[in-house]
Image 1: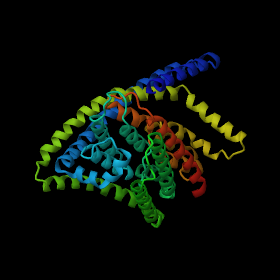
Image 2 (image 1 turned 30 degrees about the horizontal axis):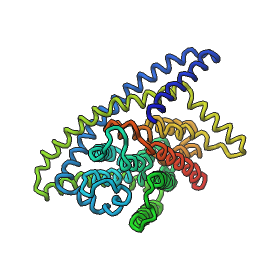
Image 3 (image 1 turned 60 degrees about the vertical axis):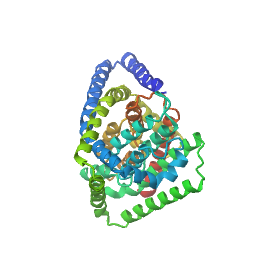
Image 4 (image 1 turned 90 degrees about the horizontal axis):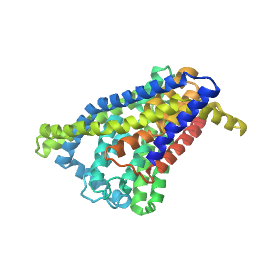
Length: 408
């Protein structure tokens, strides 16, 4: 699947560039594409270099959590659920603890913490995977959950809206919460259907009800705050939670009477090698996406959406935010750039800016997550993970547009 998609990006980009060059006389497009591809390759390397320190930090802390037994405690708390949705993973596998912490970090919008935890979980799942190049059911499910993860506190988006002059930056908080929750549920239910998981089991339903209740309480708390306090409080809660993770790991290590410093160093060493493994996979994906973008294919797709919705008699005000939606599954930085451009062009308080912000927070960067998470364990046959993740993306984008019309 990845082989076809990756090659397809280049072939489509080349064909479109040929059309622009021959029929439209835009001979400069070749130079633009080459420069863009080289810049993307350099950007991919820089991303991995910048990620190295973060990987070392969090894998070092995860090592402390693992040796101290903290991951075992967390695993036992969710063991009934994971026994139902990941039956092939042994109950004593450290992967369950890493998965739990990855999901918790994603929920709280702690991207820098979630990625190292997710990579560690994927490596641990690979240790029990009978195939060296095909994703197991557990890895596919984990990938889909990551690609459609719920984010309760979209700190980055709130900060960008605030910097660009939004009178109420946190106005997108509830729409993002609802849209990303729709995305996650669609992703989970679709992969559960493919894997024939019994989601109507009492245990699974109990956890789902608890998650719904938690999301509802958090949403109620933030919506009850004065608008001017939401961004500040969200950032405070996120940063406090992040530091509590760090303190919690260290304290648990001390109580377990282990040398937390030495264990941290051992885990941090793994972070360096993980970052090295990621580089070729990230370069491959980012240069392909760059070719697609610089050739003008995405511009044509946006124009096509506008014409289609106009023909159907639908309101097209949201179409200006579609570049963010198109790029979101492909490139996190590209989608973020599109969101910022929309906010600048139409205004941070415009409907277009509102929709773009909600779309940005509604889903994850599917191809980035897929390239990094499966790349680190050298898996190229991803099974149902990609189509289910893309279905979750589509559901999240549609929900983002729908809730934007309701809330704006």
